[in-house]
Image 1 (cartoon, rainbow, N blue to C red):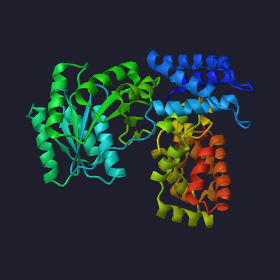
Image 2 (cartoon, rainbow, N blue to C red; image 1 turned 135 degrees about the horizontal axis):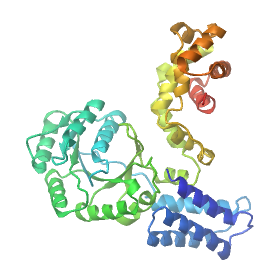
Image 3 (spheres, rainbow, N blue to C red; image 1 turned 90 degrees about the horizontal axis):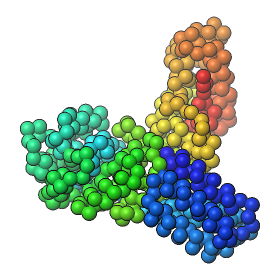
Length: 447
């Protein structure tokens, strides 16, 4: 995400390299490129100009420390202004009600129904809540069925009234049902339209007035750029929602919506969708997003994702096996599965400081471990448990069974053996060391 914007900003900073101090001339050159980068990212001219004017004012008023170059200082100023533009700080959901009522709004095709399931899964697995999903879209064909399928995937009940075409009544009854059946969060999906219209606005305004939600969230497709901002303003003028959800931020988005929606509607972005799966949802942190836009990585989010998959008891068992030199391909396969649960491999690597630019033109498959898994799955149970028995004939059979070459099989086995030796000498780090080494060393073999 934001690759084009990051590239343009990086080129803008080069105008200050080699200069010993900041002047109006070199600041003007840099900010001209910054403004163009923002306009290309579909940020409005008004906000782009306000943004660069603030940077100019701060840059010319700063004193340069001997240990900080003008380019570094400009990056710091732009980083802080980007974070401020996107909201400054993370704003969490209001879940103080019992039940907490969350109303979901947005245009058709923005990903509302999928987000409802993602949010329910997030609240269930991360917050320990017991959510109820409500099928309030009675117009779109198969909308109710879609929500039921998603609810079944995450084991969350879906409240629906298939024969009732009155969304306000459905929403009101769902809240009562939530109280009577021990749920503490109710998430109400609503109908969207292809464009903002009075009928839709009247209907969702009536739902809001009836259920009095603790949170009204506006879901918008980030790929629609400045149109997303304009739509958000129209909805906010009528609904006065509490927060924004940007979906499809993992796609080919220029980033204009993420950068400017807070400035236009004065409401925070609370979540971003980063994939199709039900767990592909991230809390929005403006400072972390500014880090990623400027190529600084996002190591905090990376660590958080790793901790979510970290099982303390399993780590202790793994540490004992490493100490006894018993770590095998079954254990290795288990760790691959944990890394894959963390999300898209290229996005994860992009969170490592400096890796975003290095990976810009590198094509990393969404399933980068596919070749490794194919080789391991082609081994017999004994071979996975006892890697030392993998002789020449066994390796040839594994290569044929996995569609790999004998060289690729040999490479994986050698890398595995080298890693196992290093892990044995680092047993105090246990699983965390192992996961780090796997990310750095064992993403092959690649064909």
